[in-house]
Image (cartoon, rainbow, N blue to C red):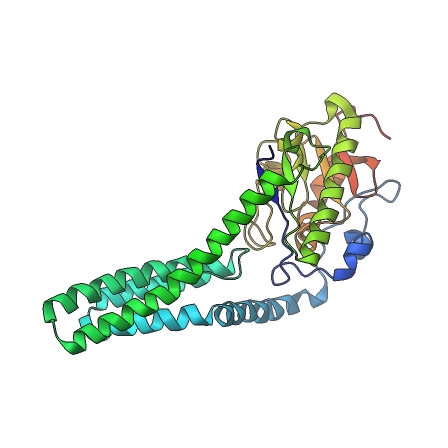
Length: 332
């Protein structure tokens, strides 16, 4: 029986990739970068361009836009949370509770903006539960119509927060179990991932995006298998590396477990090339990356090390595969 369902969700707020990328190979990143060695395939250098200063302003606007959409997409939750917090403030006048509720709201917004989910801020529910319980204690002691009205309002808003969240998570879990139990598993070229079900949940764009990504994984797995025993310690210049786990390969030391631009690294905060790539024997550059911006930054940051230590040994429809120059890997 298949053990899980898989769907790669395309997040337009995080990774700015055009829809037409699904019908053609993504543009080669180093079209805008000078090649390190004109006599062979190489990596781009890290030279910055004059218009890079404009990125900061655009990035600030993007972050503000994400925050606005996060609030607008969860407006009912925020309103219910605000009512519960207001009821607690009126009934208790406890600055420590208000500080806690403010922390729940702020932390929830930050987590949502750094996550792939677009709805359901669990910290709002946690804060509302604490506030409603505190109001209930106060109302029991006061025992008046006003106190009971405040308690009733807080409880109603708490249900407004919790019930849709519980229903949504229940539906998601049931859907996952049903798909994993009834659909045939995808025949991955990655043998250790051969029990994964590719889920079609009715969102056409996500389904096409997932199918394309899986196609690139199968293509890369076949290319690595053709390299034989030398294909180990693989580093992937993309969001995640599915090949180490999927093929049971020894992992390179120092590599990122997740390469998420502006979350695990950026141009100002990153591990040195000697740490990230010191143990890598194979470097895989995707032609269809999950994170186009991250791939571009990766090539710019680590270009000198990559160009001086690695050479192209194989190219497929989805990948350019480079091997460390002192490692004897058959080309093809």
